[in-house]
Length: 269
Image 1 (cartoon, rainbow, N blue to C red):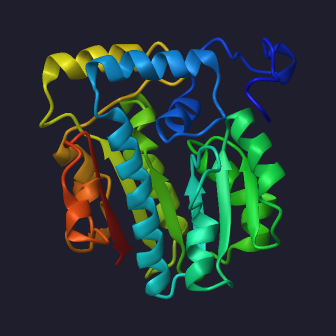
Image 2: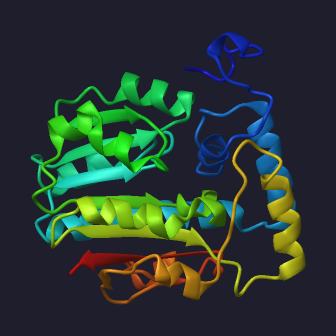
């Protein structure tokens, strides 16, 4: 779908005049699957947080390294929650580079994401679930998960830049725990999360206000609260760190993109 051919977008079944988290992220990554409202929101955010594009790209690079790490440990199944729009170095591509037998299920409730995923991911070992990741029962009972994933064997569950969209009243820890119950020992939890601990409070508040005018408000958390979400998992070295510092491919890639996004990989005990 070209963003130039959608007009007002009313026929698409969603409001293109309201910024959307997945499409803002796509714009920050240099993608083309976004609308004017998303681009404007991203530009306003970058006025207060100029490093936003660098942070988004560091987060995406972390995802690739984490997937390679999991595949190198013999994990051949991946459940990507809140997967976002397909772009370069998607999970199934990174995993297949290690072993073509890897299977991947993408989960998202954004109609643009689902539409693009169905169009682009025509692979027998890749599935797409149109569901809200905050509903684990619906995700786990979905036909693609049941067809492609054997949850009696290790699986990597990816919650990359996802849980900061889950407010406290919806209990993100309980959400993670429910997925953890379904994961076999040796499975991995891959997570990144917005963390404002080391940020300039005023600049962060301004950028957050811009972001929260969109359809999906963000709920940053401190490092201790993010670490608690890994309950039941053993964090692998180097632990919970700024995403560019998690096992960088090259020493020069480890320069922190500021500590707005931290992440880690935990193995189920």
